[in-house]
Length: 99
Image (cartoon, rainbow, N blue to C red; front, side, top):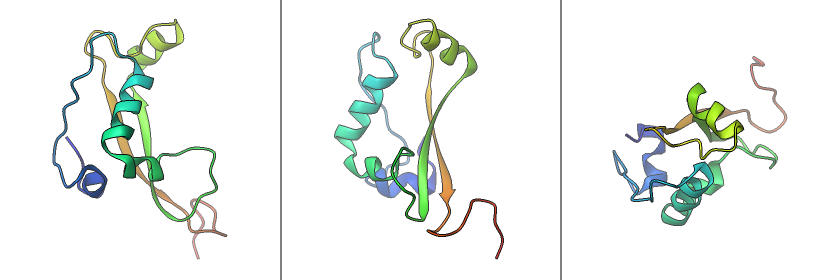
């Protein structure tokens, strides 16, 4: 399911399904997402300086994180990669600062 704020990044789709092999890991899924929906890359949280607007945060369940930390794929046994939309402060403002 694609939340409304992310739909423009996914060509307006309400839901996406990726046909990736069962052995795919988190990195593989992100790579496929970015190749199919390149606008997503502009909004992924990372090391770039914030420019305002929103960014997309990737999250895994606790079980998936434990599996990934142990050298697994992080997505076996029905694991899911979750995407969240978070607000990004405008340049010169700190997150949580009121003004």
